[in-house]
Image (cartoon, rainbow, N blue to C red; front, side):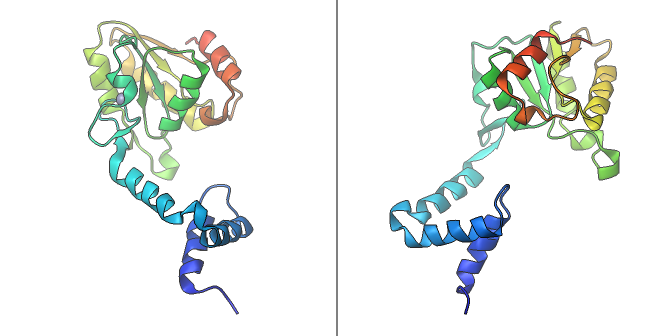
Length: 198
Ligand SMILES: [Zn+2]
């Protein structure tokens, strides 16, 4: 005695989500099927819409509507002479919630990790250099996690940015070693910004 195949497939899909174990996946699947008020079709449509309509900002790599600049790049209120470089798009959300920064961002899409096959050409480094070349002075803040690959990536970028006429800083105090920006609390991020140095 077992669930019909489509239910199995739904459970398997749910199980592949972060922080959802086998039991939770089963409970969610059954809840979706039994509680019609939840309308699982609208959930499915929301997923399809995200897949179809959401992409990466052509300028900074943050989430945006496909082919359009993200809200931050399009905003007239942001300081244009400061670019904060982060590993991943969700890091932007963490920094925005901290309220510490009013400039623009650049999402690398990861960190250098030759052992895992992540090389400079796999990250948004070329486009970062193009952006910096168009800047008239200003500052590039390397807000990359303080783990081994993060440090190596910051050092690599700092070298590339040398002689480009921008001040290069990096987040210093506040972030625990080994931490990802995504999971840091607002105060920690704000302190790290205040104490940025190179
Ligand atoms: Zn953008």
